[in-house]
Amino acid sequence: MFVGSYPLRLDEKGRLALPVRFREQVAGGMVIKKGQERCVYGLTMARVAEQSAAAAAMAPSDTAAARMRARMSFGSMVEVEPDKTGRITIPANLREYAGLDRDVVVVGVDTRFEIWDAATWDAYVAEQEASYADMESEGMPTLS
Image (cartoon, rainbow, N blue to C red; front, side):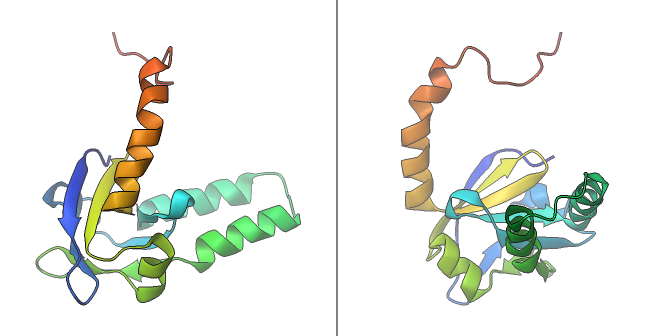
């Protein structure tokens, strides 16, 4: 499970040192891809396999929207392997898509992590925080 928010920096070659807590989880391989709201998603290979199996198990939906989702999701995936120091290289096309320049925030979101431009993340949080605080429930089961 990926949790927490980590302000980090990309180096001049587009490399990012993953948070130490995430490195063991991605040791078996990972992909990065375009995410919603103009961020980059990081997924383990096991999670990609689960998503592929779930999509295959769904009722056939050969619609233009289904084809577009599959193309944008699987077509934007890039397999990356962290180096000895836990760094991954984010390709230029994904950096451009998400507006990643130097200051970024890596956000754990349960089964994936997201890489956001720091200013974009701050604006997103400012916009969403009041709505989140006013919600009756956070939409997750309570533990007793």
